[in-house]
Image (cartoon, rainbow over all chains, first blue to last red; front, side):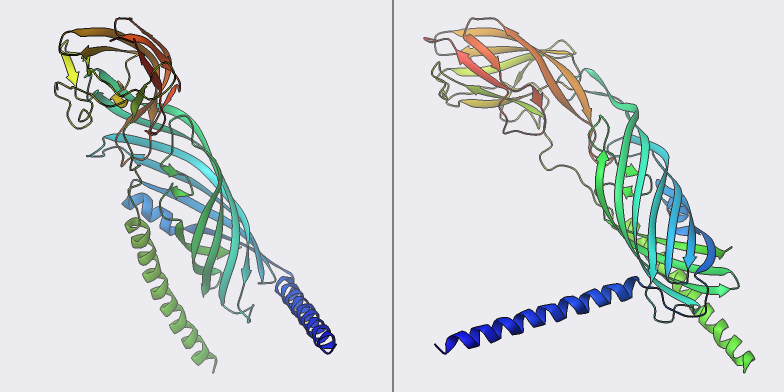
Length: 229
Length: 189
């Protein structure tokens, strides 16, 4: 007879705790998405940027990309962004497999960054963001004619203009700082996740414009020179 | 006061520049050093055969089976079924007591001609098998050797020791678990 009130009290406490938790979480979510109220105007202008890491990769390895971005500044808090690039790979002298791989295609990413710093209007920004990215590209894979290992027939291997496509998401974490006037420098680390793909007729693809090497590390990075316009 | 503030900002900016340059170098080195070779562990493409009796049960060979093919240079080679993947030289092979075996398949020739030689102590019976196929180049990565998958399109054979050779699965890939042919020997051989 005495146990009923205890159970009822426990359930009531649990329900109240859950409601408090949900309301706290909801208010935190609302706070995250709300715009800070102050005298600074909502629209703060555009910024253009280009990535130095992709350029360096292009110079130092068989692949890389030229990439630029246009970013909208909403109250120094939210930054919708479009990134456009041109990725290229030219792997032509593999000493072991002798396989040549060439591709070159544009790609884009679209997404949004959020400034996580409390002091939104200062010279520094710390971002977290999300991107959706897509590229449609053609690959040439080839190898010089070689002997079949058993039958010894002359064997040619490869495809030309094999049509492929790739969709992926990126989670970005980055920072930028005002250096002088409209000039900023910023970097970002990206975690990439493929969501859909078409590898063409030959099995798999190697370098995907904008994504990097398929099946390799999912981490990437950019170092941006940014100019407010 | 303004001058001090400006100097402070300038110091911070320089410091940020140094950090940014270090970060860029680190990012490039991490990205270039993180590349890995991503080739399949099982990278042999071969045709799987299973010998069966008329009831559909696995039938271990009582005779000795050797298989010969014709190479580009015109020489007939005997393929050692147990070691042919590692040695392309001519090898005499004798398979017995087994009910399953695998054979290589030519990379890009439209038809493979195989001679199945069944031997016992008294005689050798030879059957010729013609396997037609489409060859599909298979690319994994620039780090992996060129490979071919195949689509078997037709098989025909003589009937000295083989009763029938039935094509079960047409797709030949890295999968070594999939049986492609059921081989039914003639009873009494």
